[in-house]
Amino acid sequence: MARIFISIGSNIEPERYFNAGLKALSVHFSHLCLSSVFESEAVGFNGSNFLNMVVAADTELDIAGVVAVFKQIEQDNGRKIGAKKFSPRTLDIDLLLYDDCVVTTPVELPRAEITTNAFVLWPLAEIAPDLSHPLAHQSYQSLWDNYDKSQQKLWPIEFHWSY
Image (cartoon, rainbow, N blue to C red; front, side):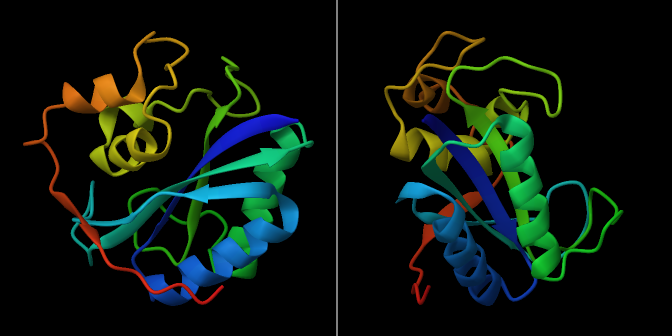
């Protein structure tokens, strides 16, 4: 069993797609642990604010299998194949960590966004504060404490789950 950490984001009907995404994740993975939901300004383009969160889960799938499940969930929820990286989206699901694996294929792990984007690091530090980044060798709480918070604006929000 591997412990994975998942980033979820949406800026198109985010409440609807967060609930649908979490429902689908709960079918494929076990022991889900949810961070708070955070609202942030769009990064890399002008667009509606995003909602973001991080989910921890357990899986018996390998990395490629996990990524394939994420892509299918995104497509089932209206994500356009080949859409521009910096654009509005119904559901964006990314694998951040797969145990302590450091790999470049089929995806880069640990995902670089962990240390560069507040909307990934803050919720990750919230649910795994003492876990250590496999390359930085610092806890996620320590990385968050030392993060330049003036770079990106985000704030926790109340979220009503219906999944």
